[in-house]
Length: 433
Image 1 (cartoon, rainbow, N blue to C red):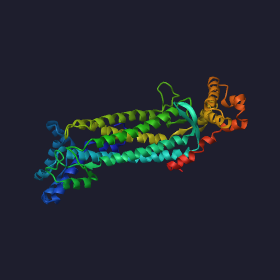
Image 2 (image 1 turned 45 degrees about the vertical axis):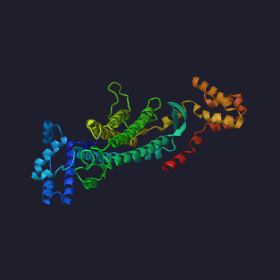
Image 3 (image 1 turned 180 degrees about the vertical axis):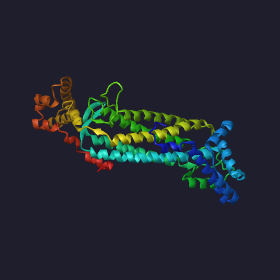
Image 4 (image 1 turned 120 degrees about the vertical axis):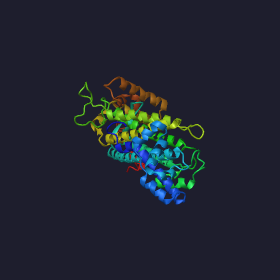
């Protein structure tokens, strides 16, 4: 669990009560399939279906003695069923129940995650459209580069989250399988039709081939999709954190009335939600490593994967749903400061237009790229060194430049609008018209 604000719905998926309920359902469905095949008397099946139940604390008490969770579960459930319980778990092995149930839990968790992803995508889309035409500075290496728009930052995140949704959806499909194929996957004591019946009732596909377990490349792919999505959330949380730095304060994560940023400095408004998203994202990504290591098991099965999965699957799904919710809150309530964004655009006193100057000198003056670059860079370095100077001012006074560019040419270079002319094209590609 992340904290008391975590979604209890996704947490309950990983509680023992839900896991044992799925185990019970699988066992009943397997008996129902056998009853339909004439392998179990109908009256015995009715006894199984009506009396099957369990008590978590009783299972744990039994497990403390037998040191086997499935045996403890079956012992407890059969104590309520009575003599008809002899039909339960017939021809099955523990992983038939455990792995099939685990896939059900993973699907349940992913359904909640996808729901939150859809909400986030909608919120990002709204911001991308809202700020489509708001000019802001673009950066490379953290240094001012050229103008763009704030909407483009959201548009990029929008498209990335759509890709993440597709990855998550495919990961859900990949684990939407079950197996009731026996000790080493050969159906030696159970008919494949029973597996098909149970899986259909559970909304799963029978695994095309399994050993004693469902192969863990499926689980690794699932965790990888969670990890990539977490990485995207970290990327955008980091973007907000950088834009919130005091020097620019172009945007700011929500800061509630009565919230306090520092125990020592009353003025602080810290990006703590985005920092939390970044930190938890690291945990989710680190869990991917364990999932990848779980792929290699001894021969047809060992249980080295099981202990790790009991940690990484609940933690990763709960954590991702949590930071998706936090990012949704940040996006929907983000503070945007247009005046600060405009002020930041002018911080370098025209240096952000240097490429336009370079290209105009080459195009209009027939100057080699190397010579044009030398002219522009020389003026740019002087502007960096002297805060009283502007790039436009220096160009207007340079005899070499004046031979090539008229004052009106220079004026036209230092305009934002040309940088934004292709924004509509980008938005059209994204379906954000």
